[in-house]
Amino acid sequence: MRIGQWCQQQHAVADRYGTGDLVETLERKIAALLGFEAACFMPTGTMGQLCLLRLYADRSRGRALGMHPSSHHLLHENAAFEVLHGMHEVVLSPWGRVLLGDDVRHAREPLAVVSVELPARWTGQMQTWAELEDLKAACRERGVPLHIDGARLWEAAPAFGRPLAEVCRGCSSVYVSLYKTIGALGGAVVAGSRS
Image 1: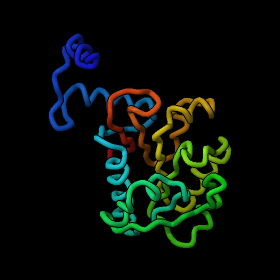
Image 2 (image 1 turned 120 degrees about the vertical axis):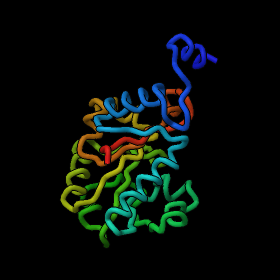
Image 3 (image 1 turned 90 degrees about the vertical axis):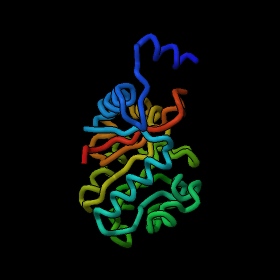
Image 4 (image 1 turned 135 degrees about the vertical axis):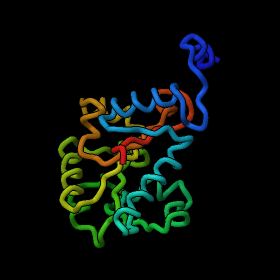
C-alpha cells in the first residue's frame, strides 16, 4: 500500500514488462550505486544470475562455473546451471574457508566465470579486503569474469568499510537482492557493462 501511495505522489506511470520510467530510474540508481554502466531489474535473483552465468559461458565457449562449495548456485537451485545451460561446477575451495585468489590461479580447468557470494551465507565468512582484491586480480590474470552473488551485499560494504562501488570495482557483474536486508520490494537487480 505504501509503495502505491508513493507512486501516486511521484506521479509514476506503471512500467510494462520491465520498461518505463519507474523501473528504469531504479536500474540507473542501482547501477550508479554499484559502480556499473547498466543494471537490469529481474523478478528473482536466481533468474538474473543464471542469465549472467549463461552469457559468460557462451562468450567463453566454456562451461565451467567456478564457485565455493556453499554457493547458492550449487546448494539451492537444483543444478539449474547444468540442466538449463549445460554448465558444470568446479568447486574451487574447501567449505571451511573463503574462496581465494590462489584457488582461481590453481583451478584444474579453464573457467568460464567465477561466482563469489559476499558474504558467504552458510559459512558466515567473508574475505578480508586484501583477499577480495587478490581474488579480483587472480580472475583478471586468468581472463575469467568475476561475478558477485551479492544477495547480502548491502551488509558486506559496511563490513569492509568501503562504498559499494569500491567493493564491486574490478568485478564483471553483481547481483543484489531488493528484499533481503533492506526490506524493499521483491525482486533483484543485476548490474554490469552495457554489453
